[in-house]
Image (cartoon, rainbow, N blue to C red; front, side, top):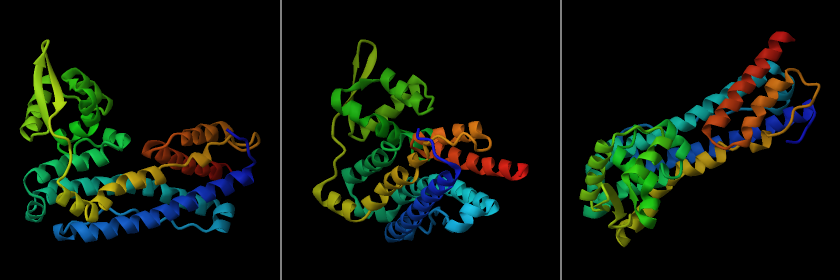
Length: 287
């Protein structure tokens, strides 16, 4: 971590928030646009990411305004989580059950797409999946987490249960086998019994027909890809991973906050801005 003075610290903090403000604006616009194009018939609204207004001079000079902006960023980080959750809810609780979906994707394509979407979103966003493993039905979640391993070499129920524990999903072996048999009925996997264990292999890869793939890429895919694009850009504040100056107030507290910015993701980003707000509130009380 590089050590800087207090003025540079505030400028760096402003620059990071300015970056996040731009990402929130462009990504929220894109999310709402793609939602309108693909899911408007559901008559469900997406959870949008609130704007983060910021004026440089006021942010650098006015501690009350600085606290206000930090609060807005903190709330926007939470909005990002709920935006993704609102998309998953709309897809799995509404769209995939709609007549429109049944007309657009027939037979096997309709089955595969539900697994494919979970793999694209939950498979990429392990941190999100640790916080929310109720929105998407469990069988799609299980395959999102384990599909690659099953495809490469096959795995047994013990390995799957261990992987699910990493997502904070507690499941009995009996319930897991029941779910895996449901996945087998969908034609995705095959199950054999070996040495008192169940062994799972891919029977049919998660591939859409050429016609369905073309339709998916032109319509739904940009919306499905949005959570990963947003997560990797918005929840990345590594620029704040520096050492506070020795003479700054409450240096140890500030240093412990900034050190968390070295890690990408919702948890560290939300923690940093929540506690930076508390840091400046503490300074305001003492000044």
